[in-house]
Amino acid sequence: MNITVFRVDERLIHGQIVTAWIAYADATQIIVADDKAANDEFQKSLLQMTTPKNIQLKIIGIAEAIKTIKEDTSDSKALLIVRGPKEALQLIEGGIDLKEINIGNINMKKGKKKILGNLWVDDEDISNLTKLSEAGISLDVRTVPNERSQDAMKLILN
Image 1 (cartoon, rainbow, N blue to C red):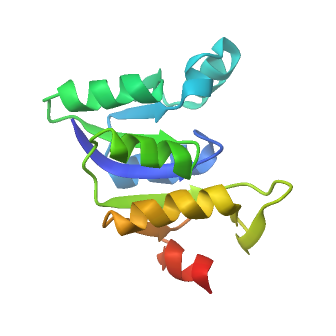
Image 2 (image 1 turned 90 degrees about the horizontal axis):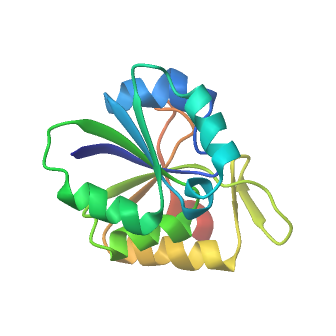
């Protein structure tokens, strides 16, 4: 399996994924690596409904995602989506060797600081993003592929 785009997006699958990111990733499948979604039948059915019929969808927990990605030796191209920086770090620490993560959407919540309209972070997010950056991973902030890329760490540290 070839992960062509690794994206952090709290919304998981939504319009921008369907209309822009699948094509940009040239993906034939989406892997949602998320323990919460993997254990929620209602959320799984909603994600399935939003996924185009020609795209294979796997909604699996973090541990299963690590195993699946490592064991799949096919040439298939996949869009990998996680809910937040914590899950992204778990995949990297689990041995998923990727050098760039697209930070698409981290929602506003109490206790989070606004960086951009679609990027709100708390101390845990900053810690996890910092660990990813220190591991040599580029953290590219873009909502859609044709937007200008911005470096997450430069935005956060300013």
